[in-house]
Amino acid sequence: MKATIAGLLAGLLFGAGLVVSRMTDPAVVLAFLDVAGAWNPALLGVMAGAASTFGLFYWIATRRGRAVLVPALRVPRERPLDARLFVGTALFGAGWGLAGLCPGPALTTLAAGTPATLAFVAAMVAGIALSGAIAQRAERRAVSQSDSPT
Amino acid sequence: MINAVIGGVMIGVASGLVFLLLGRMAGVTGIVAGAWPAPNRWWTWRAAFLAGLVIAGAIGRLVSPASVPGLSTPFALAAAAGLLAGFGARYGGGCTSGHGVCGVGRLSRRSIVGCATFMIVAMIVVFVARHGGAAS
Image (cartoon, rainbow over all chains, first blue to last red; front, side, top):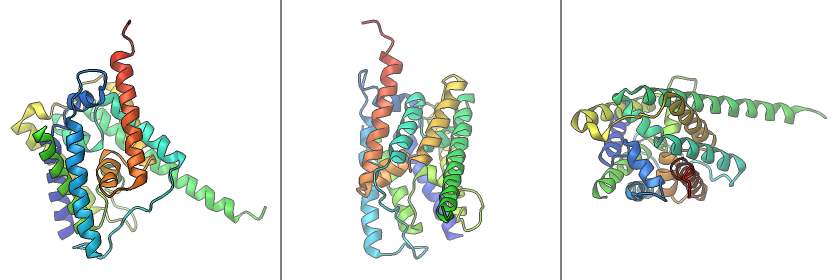
């Protein structure tokens, strides 16, 4: 129960931060990405504020050695720079550059209810599911290959 | 810019609380991927987080409609963009929140490189879309 409430509060604060910083307005995001045009550096300020603040919490939590509501701190393994990273982030960047929206702001702007917003979110969820299914298939195939005697 | 930094700090606090309280990374793509029931999946906090995003946006739209305009691109373009963004983010291990905020914030080399990659690609896409067709 506490975890669910914590999740809800974090989501509310995260969404509020997106609105306050206007990351929910595609025009503001695209203005940052439009380096050859009327450039708006605001997104850099958002990233700087967000990353540094998260870094502080990260440092506090890892020094503690455990989370507050559960024992384990789950940090992603530092995997090598592989094709998957470059292909994935490139595809993501393409989608982001086409619409000026990414997952967080897209969900936060669902309330605007425009058909394009709904299309983006639906396709985004489908893309997330598709990627997950492909990864699962690859894992299963890898296991069956290693079991093969030849 | 000041509202950008303030909003950014709010995002950082929210992400930081997810890690400090729940021990998990606050990458929205990963949260979406895990937000419904499955065996051995801690889905409840994730679903609540997404609900929080949507509710915050609804309130934000009431308070300041101009801040939450929604997407107004053609439908097919919006769908294509969403598909690329969703698939790419999951495949590449994160999006602006996962790599850009949490990954960069904890100085992960993989995230710094990933973030740089999606920013550069996005900038190229916008350049082509806005300036590529110009006769010069």
